[in-house]
Image 1 (cartoon, rainbow, N blue to C red):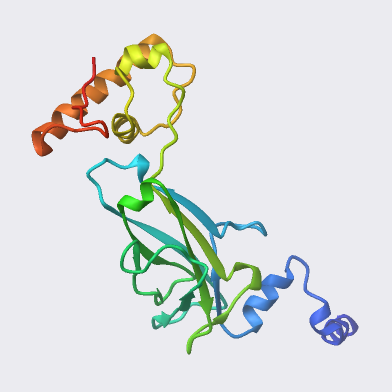
Image 2: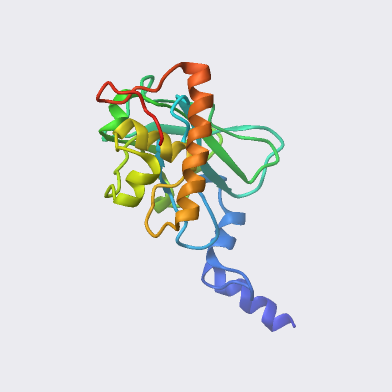
Length: 231
């Protein structure tokens, strides 16, 4: 066993024990570092597309969590995560979003940075971009170089389908406001291949939701100044 032991030592960083990967070796032999993380494997997603369209029309805010992971060991104390927002971002701080406290909490290997999104009128016609880049802090170095920027797009746009005879007979005349309401209630954006029974069930659900909406907010008025109704 002795020659084998010396052979391993002599190999240095170029050789790892069976079952270990270079990333694992780096994790336990380097300074603690932070990177964006959303899964297992080399193709970890570091971007997300958020659309307010699937939320109720009355909801004006939501939270997205940017996942991070430490390279190294967990700690007994919280560690500060440092970041910056790239100049190429088109989302405006304070108007479209605010970023919460960026901390890797004690005892955790995986954590998240909260981004509080605000639903604004300009999102109905635009897709805004937010690029958050991790920076070195007193507690954490930068991790994998290709996972230091999280790309978040935010919009409130809807692309309506072709308003077929089936959709017209089910939901009535089209309007942008009506379709937005339908999508927020049904949580779907595709209406192709609907069976008559499915369409009828959808229409009933929208009618009931509209009754609740009007009880709380009054009539829902579309972009043409007409009251939204379902047949």
